[in-house]
Structure formats: structure tokens, C-alpha cells
Image 1 (cartoon, one colour):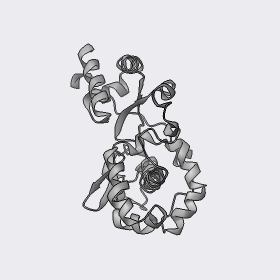
Image 2 (cartoon, one colour):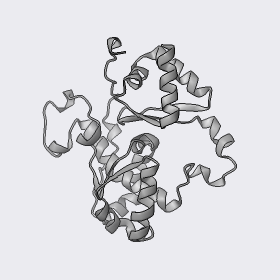
Image 3 (spheres, rainbow, N blue to C red):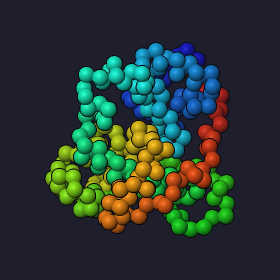
Length: 235
């Protein structure tokens, strides 16, 4: 187990995130003794594992008690410790709202993009899906047309802001299409943001641009979702 722990810790620190399907990540999520030791090793260097069962990746982040020692000299760290400006944060929240809110609704109700809006009497028995089967993509052109004027214009959004969010791992850009990046559903807390967006001012902004939001927080009807069973033979 020692070698596996050292390997996973090093990979998390080096890569910042890893897919949930990774063999050692799966072990950390379901093997209690392995997870306890991993948490101990990360805590020793001021980090913690960011794990969201609805996300397709896990990541490492600073432990809360390390925020001030690491970023305290920079006054803006409370809003963003990755150098995002206010308009970039606003764009990130808009993208999160348009991708993650509908995605969470599909995951909770066990629907996929292919059967959106269709009834399925056996839906509750389906395993929870991750990735592109439940996470819809956005058109860059539509996003910029709807929100570009509020965020500094087309050139700024397309050439600078979206590129920065992609480099940080929040989104992936492919031929004019925006997809969920590895950190979008890990770094932003659904439980904190969902109600604020659904029942806040941003809901009106999104609705005025023609984007309908769910009328409730998906976790109001969600159960705790178990991880896939760990197979020791695969380890």
C-alpha cells in the first residue's frame, strides 16, 4: 500500500486533478484505511482532497487553515486565488450555471442527454452517469452573443477570458464548443451556489438571455450516491 499511496499523492500534487475512473483514485474513494492515510499525507503539506461524487474528477486544494498563510499577502485572494478578475469570475459562474445545474438535475433523476424530458419508470435504478452523457456543451458564439456585452465585449471574452478558464481547467474548448473541464464541478460548490443562482439575480439575467434554469435545488430530492464497489483484485 505504501507505494500506491506515494504514487497517488505525487500524481495529485503534480497534476492537480485526476479522473474518478483512475484505479488508485477509486481505491481512495472506497477503501477507508487507504483514504485516511492519503488524507494524512496531503494534510501534512497543507492540502486536502476535493471529492464530489457527481463530478468525473477529483482534485487537491489548500486546506482552509492554509489559505491565509499562503495567499494572505494578496488582498484579492478571498475572491479568487487563481488570478481571476471580477468579470472572469462572473463568466465562470454563468458557464457553471448553464452546464452544472442541468447536469445535476439529470444525475439526480438518472436521465441522460439523449432522454432529456422523457419518462423512465426504471430511471431510479440506473447507476449515476458522469461525463458527456449528462454534461451538455455550450456554443461559444451563443454564449458570447448572450453575455459578451455585459462582460467587456466579444474579443475580450473569446480571446482572453475563455482561454484563461480553459488553462485553469474549468472548461475545455473544442472547435467553438465549450465543455465541462475537470475542475468545473469540483472547485465550485453546488450546495452553496445552486440556491443563490436559482433564486438570485443571476436567474433573471440567464432567463432574459433565453436560458431556463431549474426551479429548485436538485439536492432537495437527491439521496447520497454510493461510489462503485472497489475490487481489490484490480488493485
